[in-house]
Length: 122
Image 1 (cartoon, rainbow, N blue to C red):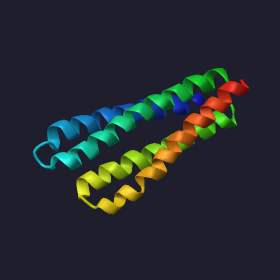
Image 2: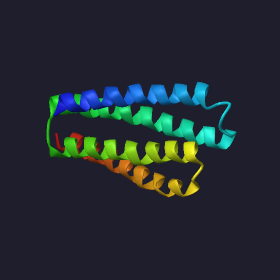
Image 3: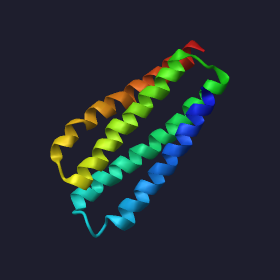
């Protein structure tokens, strides 16, 4: 499973860089400043958690287990829900999509907590 987490981390970091560049160069003239900031927040958290998936993969190489895998899946869900909802909100202007974002934030918190518990159980 560790190779999957490493690959997903690398792919998500790649996508975060692409999203950040798209926001900075492709959307700058097309979106109002508030929606551009929303998009950039999505890209920023996307990158943080792409790197988090790499950490999950590295941890899984040392101590594979169900808690580590649960952390990875929960972090991936957080990326989709948090960053995905912010990307969609910024591009569509549909503000109700912002209601999904906190669910993704909770997934991020849960993922990091699961990884911490896995580390302490060693």
